[in-house]
Amino acid sequence: MTAIRDTAQILTESLPYMLKYRDQTVVIKYGGNAMTDDSVKSSILSDVLLLKTIGIKVVLVHGGGPAINELLDKYAVKSEFIDGLRYTDENTAHLALTALAGKVNKSLVQDIIKLGGNAIGVSGIDGKMIEAEQLNPKLGYVGEITHINTEMIDRILTTDAIPVIATAGIDDAGNIYNVNADTAASRIAGALHAERFILLSDVRGLYSNFPVETSFLHETTLSEIDNLIKKDKITGGMIPKLEAIKFAMQEGLEQAVLLDGRVPNALLLELFTPEGQGTLIKKENLE
Image (cartoon, rainbow, N blue to C red; front, side, top):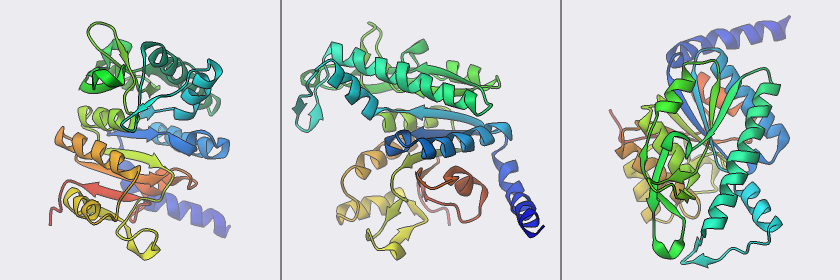
């Protein structure tokens, strides 16, 4: 009986947060190791379905690096790097789209349906959702996002389905581009004026002095992040993610969260508890 009462208490305490996010848009970027571990994937998608069930407009945006690499290996396509960036020819761009929009996207839709929900899988080239242009001729079909068209996403959100979006870009000539998934998700969140953008990663969030646990940042601002980068307290793969968030905030995004997707029910803990779970990033302190 005690366990039942504890569950009831938790639900009661979560109610204000459920009401806060009801009818609001939450964009979730899903990728990395969280996509390759079946138990983690099941936990994340169960959370996503619960959010949808209580009236939150959930948009799931994903990458799929491992699936792309697997398909390139299958066709013996060797990767060439120029100034640290992968060169993408036209064939590689189409293979990447096949992996993202075919294998990964439809697998996620299938998994959501298995859990009892509904989902519609689309890619960034559908309806010219993610418009892009060539970033640099020497990189081939690597794209820079120029515009996000939200019409198709808006239409899906009026149904009982969760939009599941594979990140690929297209230009007016019909050229397909490989685009950064974190950047695409951030831009989509900004274009939708999302109440919350959550970037799932394989780390807890940001630290002012990693890996000292007491230096974990529950909340920070863009200016504080810039200072930490200058002091080399934030380095490596986290910087592109933060740059994507920063750009999206210039486009209208108000807040973002870096969250460890490996933690069971991380999305629920982040949205429905007062302390949250990851690092909340704001433009600036409002105090």
